[in-house]
Structure formats: C-alpha cells, structure tokens
Length: 403
Picture 1 (cartoon, rainbow, N blue to C red):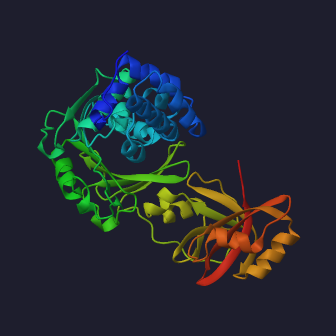
Picture 2: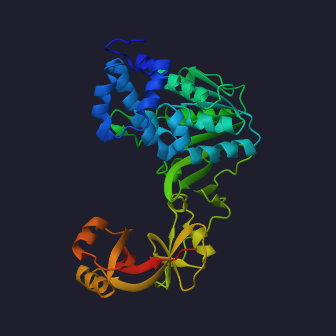
Picture 3: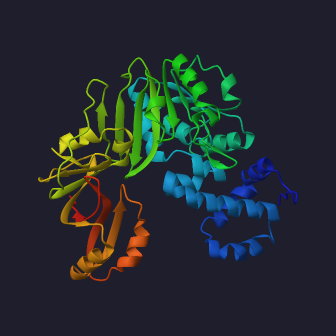
C-alpha cells in the first residue's frame, strides 16, 4: 500500500488523491456525513496515511457543497478547492454562455483565469476547443483533473501561466473571468480585480469576439461604450454580468437573461424606455427579476404588463389588470396599509396567517425583525411588502399568483 509523508504540500496532497489509493478512498468517504467524519477518520487512519484520509474527507465535503452548482453527477466525479467551489460559475450559467459563443460561430476560446475549469467544461461540451489558463499550479492541476474526469481532455488544454503574457491571437474568442476575491474577501473596485478590469477590456478589444465576466453590481457608467452588457439570473438569483465584445454585438445595448426559462429582455440605446409613470397601487403588483433591475430594464418589463411604478425610486410595478410576465413575479394585493406594526399584526391574526413571507424594497426594517413582532399564527399564507408608495412608508399584503 502506498504511503505519504506526514506533511504534504497542497499540490502533493491533491496528487495523492489521484493515485489508485486516493481514488479508492474518495469512493469510500463519498457518503460520510459531517457528524460521522471523526469516526470515519479514526477507522480509515488504521489502513491509510492520515494526511491522505484528511484530504479525502475534505474533498468529499467540497463535492457535497459543489452539488448546488454542478449537479450531483458531475460534482461526484470532479475535484475542487475551497476557492474553486466559491468562485466557479454555476453550470447552468456556464452552459448558457457556451451556447452564446457557439451560436456566434466560435470554435476555439482562450479561457483566461479558468479556475477549476467550470466554464472550460461547458465550452468543451458545446464542442468548442479551449485553452484554459491560470497562474496557480494547484488550480491548474484541479482543472486538468476535471477535464480528464469528465472525458473532455481532448478539447481542453490547461496551461499554467500569467494570463497577461498569453498570446490569444490564434483563438476565435477570449473569455476572461478576473478574480474578484482577495485575502480580505470580495473586491468591489474593478481595478483591484486580478487582472484589473482595464486589462481585461483591452484584451477583449483585441480579440475577434470576447466576453468578460464581472460582478453584477458594476456601475453602468463603467461599461465600455462598444460593449453589450448582459445580466444573468438563475431561478431568481442574479449570478453575474457579462460584457460582450465583437462585430456581432450592439454597442451600448443592455440585456437581462433569466435562467432556466431563457426569457430575455433587451434594449439598445435607441429603444431604451423612460421610467414609467407613478400611479396608485392597483390590484396587482409585479416584482421584476433582479437581472431586469440590474440591467435598468424595468421600464421594458412595465410596458409588457401595461403598468406603472408605485414610487419613482422603487422597482415595483403595479397594474389593475393581471398579465403573465416572463420577467416578473405577479402578486395579487389585498391590503394597503401605512407602516404600522400593530395594524399589520391585527390584520394577519384576523386572516389566520401563519406562513408569512416578508419582502422589502426601500425600507430599513429587516424582514426577520418584523416577523418576530407580528408573530404569525394560523393556517393561511401571505406576503407582506415593506416599501414606499409615492414616498410614504407602506405595507402591501397579498399573495403570489402561480401558473
């Protein structure tokens, strides 16, 4: 039986997991729950080196965390680092972007700052040849192992290098995903990304086609004039923004893409609508998807439902008629109250509301704080919106319309 030293570097620790002994151990600890780790470690250390057992258990935990992003089947075969699980693109988003590249006729992509290879995997599955580049040796080893584990090694070349020194001229497109986390957590200044956003933009301008993955909170005024900006949400959660470059994009255009429905709303600078009028709260309230809000396309969503805003600074749309919308969740409003916790508590008690969803927009009150104060009890459900209506703090009570 192969043995390893008591102390292993991260790279050596990962290499040990790729040995027959390491792979067998990974299979053995696959279903170990956190509560059972100590007992499993004690048992396995009788027949395996302690560092290898620790590495296998740590990898099993990472695979369990990765299921939410990669799905159970892929996560069980892939390898991860803690940063890789945290920073990698959700598989559904990566697949959508890969299809965007494929639809543009792209057959080869230089994936710069590839991380553990999540985007490279999606690109390869779309039939695209990928050069995956990262400067961290362990990250490259993990990306290479993932390409092999998923049968994509022929389409993915992993290269350990500084992305700023890589010649990408032979590739149809460039994809850049700068690191937006540092030793102190999330980085909000785009010029503090690694590499800086300014470098990534220049790299994109030199390529026939390019996409830059950026934080969804990026100010619109920092988006280059020649780029088309897209905000992507997955099941209601805004995941990222992408700047698209190339001859086939509309400069200055904005898009919101909602996954998994593939509902997209788009506007060019010439077709952008002014803010809708403010009107009294009607029977129906529409909550635009976060990607629609980030893309500044609430006016387009409001036009679809013939609605107006409840307040000029709040992204809630109202209408007296019920419309199906691919870009917003529809609620039927039953009550409108000035902000008053006692009145709300009395109303919820009268309606026998025990299942309470609290949403806020334009209010300083925390949903959990309100929930504790009203103490919902009963068999019915309701949604409360803490917001402003024409500038006044207001509570709207209603329920979502499904179907």
